[in-house]
Image 1 (spheres, helix red, strand yellow):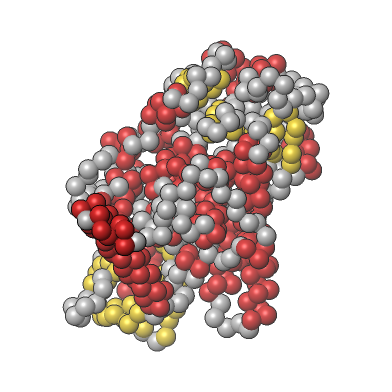
Image 2 (cartoon, rainbow, N blue to C red):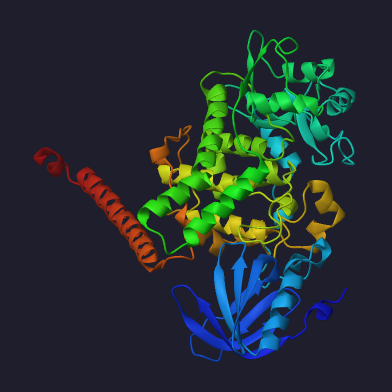
Length: 550
């Protein structure tokens, strides 16, 4: 298919661009296969380059022969384009609608993008499972890297290599896969260096109404327990939902068959509820007309902060079982690709200081989201503005990033990365020139040859100039476990995402620059103090009289 077939009017002059808190710009609007571009001859006017894949919805308005298009983006931006001529306006709107809803992955921009920067490190090779396993081998010899899924037929959503207990062979894993949802047998998610406890993740067991049993499954998860120790199974569903799942062939681990494991049910909402919550939240944030009471009631009605609290509470529980109870943990919900990953990745942010570094966080996103089979293509197909009926869209990954931001805000010196890094990852998960978040699984990415045909987001992030921009100036390495507060008073609206386009950032930018200046000045003074101390010590050794004067 040729993009030209979808572009009815490739260029319109005299278009006026309106954006909140920015001066209006008049210029020429151009449509390409992947971008909506507005360029102006005005001095100092910033060009607009908007990926079609970033557009969530389009609205048309007409006053006489003047048409306006309201463009609502997946990064929650809303812009207005005034286009002279009714026909031109119709053509631009229908072309953008067609180009922004293309669902053919091989036609996405990452396949056409050519980097203008030097790729120092290929991000596609930066976080391979075999490299992560080498780190694990320095801490324990109780696990092995299995290639039972090398052709991705045992579990289509798992990567070809997974870490499993050393005493469990591949035939056992194949049998367990038939007993777990979508073949997602229990695999290692995290090893806690401090006490040797582990966190595993899986899909729900397929016990059904007859209480089906799998001895191999019991053997696999018991192999992670130390003699005389118990483990915890954290089910991210309520007990009622878990019971209902039995009728559909799913279920949960019974106490009779898993006597060494204590099952705890938590209440993390399903995908469709989360999508409705995001829509309500963004609508509240964009409504400029309401009073304080109306704003607060709309914010509460969205339930977004409740979801943040539920996810953080469950992650804290998992971390507590591992670090304070000295117990191993298995986490699952239904599929094991959404709420399960929120919990396992956030628990690692709490427990592992390496995950709070820029590189460590990239590794966490790779291991616990991309390689673990979170369906990014389905979940991020729409954001909060789409007019079409939600299918499998849900802000699961955005909620995870929101929870990370909540912890970052409570521990501002314990993270190497700044809020800007989290916002950047959010933006690229929904629309990007990089191939990192395309597809739903490692198998899909391999089939599309993404590592060969596209550039990784991490290749761009890991350049010195980008790292400098994304580094938190307050960072001081903290090797401790950090315990965030989940009290409602401690959880705030993430303004950096939800109010990013609705307010001027001038004051915040100035405050940030002043903070950086103070930190730099403090370092200078500290260096001077150290230098003077060295000079004084040298003088004391050279002149004994100084020592007697003291």
